[in-house]
Image: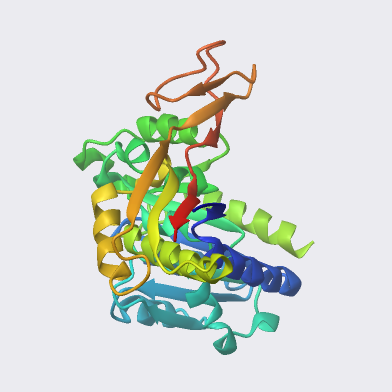
Length: 218
Length: 113
């Protein structure tokens, strides 16, 4: 006998993500999910973002990695609360992993929660966690062919940070091509060209984030 | 390796459906998967073979319907299938296109006894 089902395969994760989102909304906390390939500069971007915004907003961070606490240690040095999730092999974070950290987080003392996903350009885009926005980094040494190779991530993200622009003289990468092709996949994508390490272009990103924080707290 | 998570979810969903129909064995499962999901069929079949062992799903045939990426033009509302991401609207040449299909990840139906 045939049974017609028509069910979203990731329905369990979607349900948990929905529960997380209701909590974040109730507490007025803006949650962003930062995604990229390994080594694109997520942790450096988060450190730089905290350095500027911690005088204006109360920030906490969840660090997702397969193994190790390197990234959480770096974030802890900035003085904001940080929780490390070790996925032990899983290539992405999901709604359930995030909800399991809630007893260690004080949402009443928080304006912004930054989640650093596991470095990977495919799977993280599929698993919602209840975040307000997905933000992705693409560093120029990775090459300008990435939007067309990994379209889902560009499609799901609200902002794209093209990182390591200080290396542009040394690599074959056209930021113009990245812009054109990612806007083709996602016409609403906000794009910033930055060097998280040197600080170039960070103001545009920080202003975008401030605007989203204001909108959330309204 | 998102195929592993996807298969885990498929098995959980189908197992929860079986008592409703008094099924003890699943013969086939039909999936609808959008091209944007970048699911690798071989990896999915392999994960299914490993994870379904010893369950009523063991040995079931997995059928995949690939759903192409369809866009809708923001200017003239023309809908068309993307052969390549470089394409503009075939009707008016506009380059702002909204994706309306190609992200599906669904169980369409299954067959059991």
